[in-house]
Amino acid sequence: MSRPAPPQQALDGPTQASRWKAQTCRQRLNSRDGSPSAGRSGTLCGLHSRESWVRGSGVAWCTGLCCASAVPCLKVCAGCSRMPSAAGRGQGQDRRPESDESSAADDYAKERYGVSSMIQSQEKPDRVLIRIKDLTVEKADEVVWVRGRIHTSRAKGKQCFLVLRQQQFNIQALVAVGQHASKQMVKFAANINKESIVDVEGVVRKAHQKIGGCTQQDVELHVQRIYVISLAEPRLPLQLDDAVRPEVEGEEDGRATVNQDTRLDNRVIDLRTSTSQAIFCLQSGICQLFRETLLRKGFVEIQTPKIISAASEGGANVFTVSYFKSSAYLAQSPQLYKQMCICADFEKVFCVGPVFRAEDSNTHRHLTEFVGLDIEMAFNYHYHEVVDEIANTFVQIFKGLQERFQTEIQTVNKQFPCEPFKFLEPTLRLEYREAVAMLKEAGIEMGDEEDLSTPNEKLLGRLVKEKYDTDFYILDKYPLAVRPFYTMPDPVNPKNSNSYDMFMRGEEILSGAQRIHDPQLLTERAQHHGIDLEKIKAYIDSFRFGAPPHAGGGIGLERVTMLYLGLHNVRQTSMFPRDPKRLTP
Image (tube, rainbow, N blue to C red):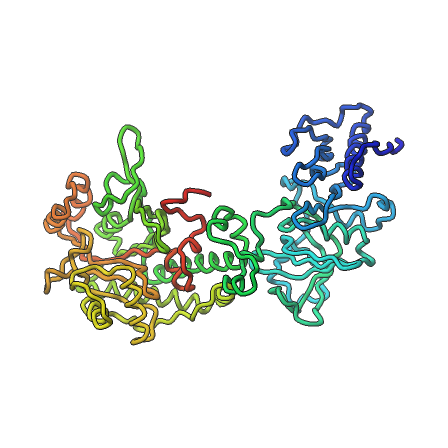
């Protein structure tokens, strides 16, 4: 079949060529069995509501124009697996990978680049993909395949420099005209949109000098093949380089930074940054170390219900949900069920799961849903046995983070500088009255039975750091009046309780206590707090058949992550945060 002449329409050069190419590809498809409509699938283009032209898995381009940039809509050509040319090259314009049609016949590398068909699990190739973090000088001169995102691209003459990113690791890749790459291939690579996912085959070469801005500074990848696996849209809602720029640098040189709402509105993009990747890898490590430590100590992991019949702690800060013909609540805490497990002779239990708090608190450290790390344990004679066990668990977590996650800590510190986290062995323990005395000495006016406010917590943290040089400490013997109904009173001073909080960098991260295990005293305390006894009958009844003395506590995972890294907002350490003003994404 002879090649048709391009349509004589008043179009810009590249746009005209691309439309002509689309028509050519359509004719190729239609002509395969001689029918003018054999290639039509009836599949609609999502952007222009035009039909795609399909034969088998091949798709010809939609000929509609993109309203934003007056360039052709991007569809894969079934005949040549190429993408159309872009009309513009300025900032903010559509940067589509392009091929040089006029010299396509001379493109000796045309099989070495292009757009892969959609991966629909059609096959299981023998190709092995190497992780970018594993590309070191030990692999010099090896031919490898890697999959990564286009982080940046820079064309210079007959070569193009790409930075390929995979999680928080990246490597420089060079596409240069030569034996394996034609000028069309270089041009194609240079115009792949940022954040597109590509498969690259290349030779690992030792760098002549360290490559700044890349985690793999000692090697680079000399590209022999490059295929687009998933193409990103040309306009990103935020630039990743802006999202990892320290705010101080942005203030000093006027370069852009990204505010919190923009990050959270576009969380999927924000989570790709090296900082976010490091934060959540470290957070995963906290969970892993928590589990490892407690399992070593003989604890059993349990799962507790999150839909309950009554407010866990008798408060009003619960979410009500419709439960068939009645109402139920989302659990504020697994507290009651942990205790019931102790009464069932599990002795040592822990759980990891969501916790819901209907508190209209728009602060840097409050969320309406967070991940709770909860512990409960029977003891022999004194609740300090449990306090010591929990404190030691934290120490093991801190040590594990220092040993296993230095790379992640350093990555976060580049954007959010912070002093290293300090802790003591054994952990510093102060009584509440001692903390009040320290605050009063610093000029704070407060009563002996008054709860700590957030500003006073932070001030106390600074005072403790100055005096004891630790960021982690315990406050013991809280006033009974500020604790939940199930807290055991202090046998010596009935105004106090056998309860404790643990702090990191001057902010509470755990609240715990010895629980009342006597049903009569528990009933009296529940009545004192105005709780409907009928709604907690099953809970109280669980203590009527013999219950060991026990204690425990609840930890907020996001808050621990935030404070260990010295960050300033818990939304940075919640993957998809929920607060009174945010319910999406």
